[in-house]
Length: 512
Image 1 (spheres, one colour):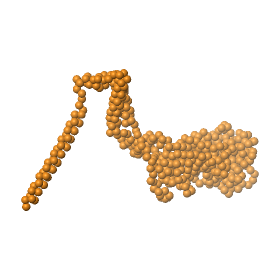
Image 2 (image 1 turned 180 degrees about the vertical axis):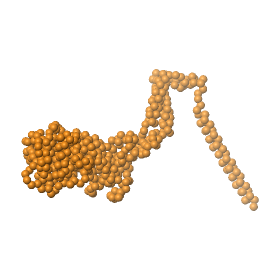
Image 3 (image 1 turned 180 degrees about the horizontal axis):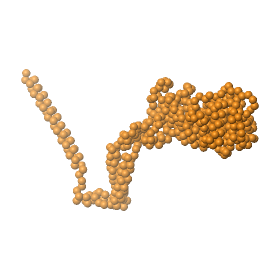
Image 4 (image 1 turned 45 degrees about the vertical axis):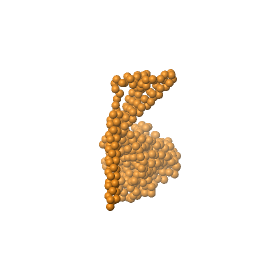
């Protein structure tokens, strides 16, 4: 019975000793920590003033190194301040997860892309200029919520006024003329003499193979007879016609840029050689053409002011004007899928000579996505701003008498620019593009302008920001500490080298 009691007391004493040792260890660790903190607090001790002269001495090397070190530190500090104030950008590329339901005709606004365009055609009339959008399946009229406007241009590219699409024209198709020809048939030989004979000469440029020219022929002859009956005296006004397929008259059609048949033009006796001649775009009936001729005759008689823009019935639609070119501008909302925008000559009342049709043009503007605000243009990086309008202010011409189709292949990429929060500007979305243009010259091709676009599923994200204050102060500390450390090493190396070179020593062990 005594043996277990002794064993218990022994274990109790052993436990007490272990506990004492553990407390002693904690106390020692605590005291060590306190001593470490105390040593750290005393680590910034400075040399006593009266000991500086004993421990250090001035030297030429130290003086030069101090000057160089100060200059370097000042330069690096100002450079770091400039870097801190400089806007930095980080660019990442990711997939653009736009809706995959791009072929749904009921696509939402997020599934559509806006195309903004502004083209100038020096020789394509607004009456014929047509804009069509198609997708990669060949479906026409693929542009949703299209908004297109056209402005007439004169031969020098000056704007004459907006074009208004006429209501459905009532062309006479069953008119019959019996009797002798009343209009004058002109060739190159008698052109100048006849033109200078009459105050007003209305000329119909036609071709025998043209369906619409054949329908106009009896109307033109009846109108000529009516005008001559109305104004029987004097050489004030008359009607004439030119066959553009005849060898003796073909050069006249080329000279006046006739590529649509029939084309009715006005020639005035007092016109100069380079004067602009208005063209008739009204209805082809005896009544309409006669009323239009009456208006021109009133100008000759000075009953009304002379003008090259005539609206004889006052319905707001120009019956004749001197616009030979057209500025076509607008926007289309298309599905986010490959497609094309096609601009070409189309008319329900003309036949075209594709061999002379010229669709030379200047791209005033072409962009994708919503119009950017003035602020957005300012904050966009230069490379992205340039890519937004890669084709702007570029001209494309064709050779004379060679039918040419201009194709622009466009790859569109979406860019998102995230600006610093301190600016208070929302992220800017801009669609940049790269383009490659071709000219196709084939006599079997209908001259057109095609913008073939492909929307890449790529998103370029640009994040602009400034360095943080933490980064700035860290760099300042690194500059000061690094320069002083390197300067100390260099000073010691140079000083030691000189002493070794000249066989001297530093018996006092003073610091340089």
